[in-house]
Every structure is written in C-alpha cells, then in structure tokens.
Length: 598
Image (cartoon, rainbow, N blue to C red):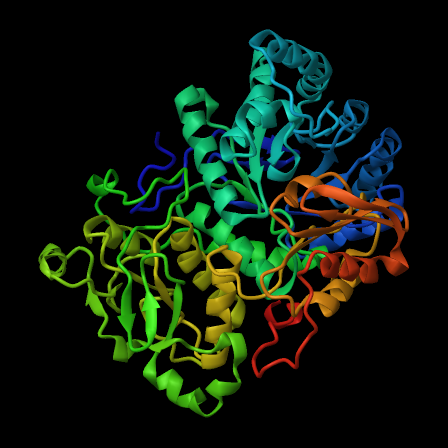
C-alpha cells in the first residue's frame, strides 16, 4: 500500500474539491485553517462574538458543538447573527451521539461533522463476538440512522466530515478490529460507503488521536485505503491531534502529528487543538500550513527503499554503543546531544539543570557525518567492523526528513543515527521561537515516529537551555522518552462541564512533579474513556459541577464536587502507589508557559 507519492520528495496529495460554504477545501486550494469556539452554544451573542474573533485572526472555518437538538436549533440564530454582521465564515456543527441533533443542525450550517464511533451508538465497552450476520445487521441499523442526514446534506448542498477519534471507537469496531489505526479507518469507511451509495460525495475525512504515532499511522492507512478503493475516493483530509493540551508541549505534539503528515503531502485543512483560548490556535496552524513544502528533493526512484513500515511503529534495530559514559542505540534511551560551543555557555550550571541537562557533546562523540546521496561514503561506513553514530552532515541541501529517511534506507541498521532538527546551526539569538519549535518538532518528531533515531541534537535554536528543553519535550511528546508528568487535555467547547484552563492549571500545579505518570483531563464524556486508555488516571466532567475520576478507562469515583476533585485525584494516585512528595524544581526544570510561544 502507498500513502504518498514519495517519502523522499514533497508532492501534495491530489484530492477533489469540497466546498464548505464559499471556502474550497482540497483540490487546488491552499491548506485551510479552522478552529472551534468554546462557549455554550445556547449563548447566541457569545457564540457570535467568539466566531468573529476567530475569523478576524485568520480562521477560515469555525466549528460549534451541537450536543442536543436545542443547541442545534440555536445554530440558526448564530448563523443569522453572523451574516447580519457581515461575517461569512462557514460554520460546522459538531455532532456526537444524536442523529436528531445532526438533522436539525444540517438545516442551518455549511458543514456537519459526525463521529462514526458514537453516531447512533452508545459506548458500553462490551465484549461481543459479532457473527457476520450480526455485524451486517448493525450496519443496516447505522444506515437507517445515517441515511436521512446524508440525504438532507445532499439536498442542501452542504459538506460533511466523517471524523474518527481514537478515543471513541464503537464497540462494534473495537470488537472486530481492536483499538487500532485499522479500526479507526474502517469506522470511517463504513459511513463513507453509505454516503456513496446515496451518491453523496461532499466528504472530508479525519483520524484524530492524542498519540502522534497512532494519529500518523491512521492517516497514512486511511490515504492508502482510499487509494485502494479507487480514484474517485480522493476526498480531502482534515488533520488534527486531539487533546494536545496547552503551552509548549501542545504545540510540539501538534507539530509532530500535523507537520509530519503535511510534509508527506497529506492534509487539506488543519486544526491545532489547544487547551487555551481558541485564537491562540490560529498562528500555530498558519505557521504549520505555510511550512508545508520543504526545499530540496531526492530521486523518486528510491521510494521503495524505506527502512520502516509506515503503518506500524517499530524502532529501527541498531546496536548499542558507548560514547563516553553514555549508552545509546539498541534498546537504550534516545539521548540528547549538545554542541561544544553551546555547552561552554551553560557548563557552569549543568549540575543544576535537572532533567534538561545535556547527555553528551556532539564534537566529542566522533559522529560520522555524511551526505546520504554519497553512496561511497555510506559503503565505507557499512564496511566498518564497529557500529558508529551517524548523522546527516550540516549544509546538505535536502529536507531534513527526506535526508534522514534516505540515510536510514542505505545505512546498515546496526549503526545508530543521530537526528538534527536543522542542517544549519542557528546564529540568530533574536529569532522567533515558535517557527523554531515547529520546525524542530516536525523534523525530529516525524522521524522518531518512523522509528528512526537513537540520539537528537537541536541546533536550530540559538539558546542552549531552550534547545535542551525543546529536545526533551520533543522526546516526551513523541512518546519516545517519558521523563515528566504527561498530560492529555482536551480543548474547551460548548460540551465542557468545567473551566478547562483553570482546572488544567490546578491539576498541573498539584501533579507536575510525578515523573512518568500520565493524566487525562477531559471536559466531557465524548472522548474521555477512549483517549484515557493509555493514561494512568483521568479527570472527566460527568455533570455540571461534578467530576468522575478514572483509572485507565475505568470510572472508579463518581459525582465528586468540583471543589474537592483535585484532592481526590491526588488521593487516587496515592492509593495506586504512584504518588511522591514534590521536591524543589531544579534550574531550567520549568517547561515554557503557553505565552512564551504565542
């Protein structure tokens, strides 16, 4: 199966154009940027105001949740108010669970987003072995509930996004395909086939997950499966990492997932999901969209030489080697390097840098630097008896991702590889940090999710301490090396049952010292249990002012008053033996605040 024209040369995937109001998605259109308002959908004036604020900062499509028929009906007033004020931004209704709400919303908006995992399904986490006849009966039931929406959408000429979320696959899909990228793809294709049977084609697909590895694999598999289905299955793709969180960590995680797919030519519209005010999502999304087409190419004849399976993560099998006192390669941790010049600037405080300290100096490691197009240099390395740490040489005129994929394809796997975020060393201390962060996360994070990389070096950021912090946070966001508390936090919307920003801040203040513990913070039940499948603990809105606490995806405490919930979460962590008392933060141990990278 092929998911892109070439893994070594940028070429945007060819998709059909789907109109969302007056905005074209796919085809020859630029990559569109969208977001979602966070207020109660029944608050008409607030919904209008937030939508206009988003449009004013460059948001091209705005999504509004419609959890009930009443909310969906109020979209009429929101859309009318926007148009009366001269705001023509297309509105998308976000639907979960309720076909009746979808039918009402489709009367008023330019696009409806449905989640095939919970449209007309309730999540019961039941283990059921479906016979083929029973499975077919379930699909017939879904068709009966879904077909009216398809017919209405076709009649009104509006678009539809079939948006699978890793955290909310149906019991039917879970029991046949498992909690896998394949299950995510098949979930969407089941609904797409129903739409196509009714000759409706204004479809856009998405495959969201809070785990970049899962998200990347699911989107690649989706595109490969669409290609297999036929040329007329060339529907546009919407990209997003769901529940990314806030601040630097969320921007890094979004860049890894979205940026890596854009580099492969996949993606026609994007949304960066932050647990912050929605307007802060737009600059990040725009920066990712505008950095899509990297300079430099590699021969298309090498597209069959990939060293990894693009649909299933597995770390590249290298030999473990020692550099000074540091072990890397094989099953060792992916290590963090620093340039000698940068090390000299921070040498006086390395002992106080806690988890963000450098692990070895690049120049002392005798790294073999090569141009991956130089077959003679690669052959010489492959002829060496001992495994060497190898990197792409600075100054090579290739995109970073393509260069390292080519190196991994040609180099014997026994040689560990050091990844660089940039093939030039930053000489500009005044450079804006957000583009540097997004470039480093996209380049290094994408390769880590391909299974390539045994050490990393961020040299596109001039500040040594900031470069080191960025290095470790990329490893954390990619799921490669967990060295601090990991948070999965959804963006706020009209379904949210508590203030996500203040609650997330309170939970972080209480738990940020718990290294290696993963905590999910979910405003409602829509994606909660599923996205918490690999979290240790979950904090989920159960009702207004009431919180449910989870261990994994199992609810264990119900209807806790919100004022008590953080303390009860701490008790739950303590009861499962994962609580330690906080110690004083080491120098540079604080992650960047959200404001530092806006």
